[in-house]
Length: 111
Length: 113
Image 1 (cartoon, chains in turn brown, green):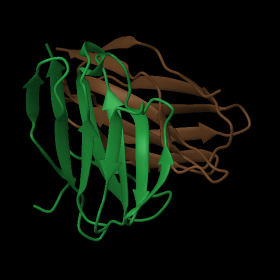
Image 2: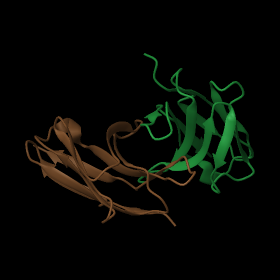
Image 3: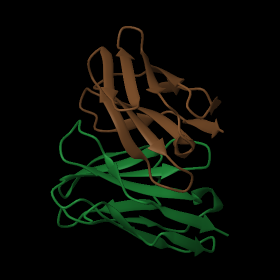
């Protein structure tokens, strides 16, 4: 089966740094995506990792370790608008063509 | 703006009725996906099209669900004999290549009473 785990909820303070972890056990792996989803809205793409290491994009960075089945999303200089759900998703390989999503981590940023 | 669009945005229907949703992907994207999302969960894959061919279908998609993409452009998702358990957000996404990012539409929120 496919299993993706993320913490359900996190809280952080405006201006701080927060790390959202994701572990996965899937039958095949062809990349890991992070999406942001505000309440009632569609997910929007944040990052994509297919090789081990850190990908940095402005205030957002994402890390992948394929051998450990582990990724994290790092958000720096938190802003109130970063309050949202963050979805970790694995793109399966082996002839499949679909993303398997975790349940998402609801991040609340407080002043 | 040429993002993914979905219609309608909200649909309320009575149990047992049929409903149909439409998705218009980004024009140059030949891959189109349907997902279902319930409160507090991530999107669950339903089905996938490459051009007009439906190449993959989840076991979640019972016989009451059918999807089409007749000309490789827009797609429709029909649910027959709706049940209360079908209440969810139905999301459509499109992508240009197999492993590139998927762009999501705003979703259709279905409420079955």
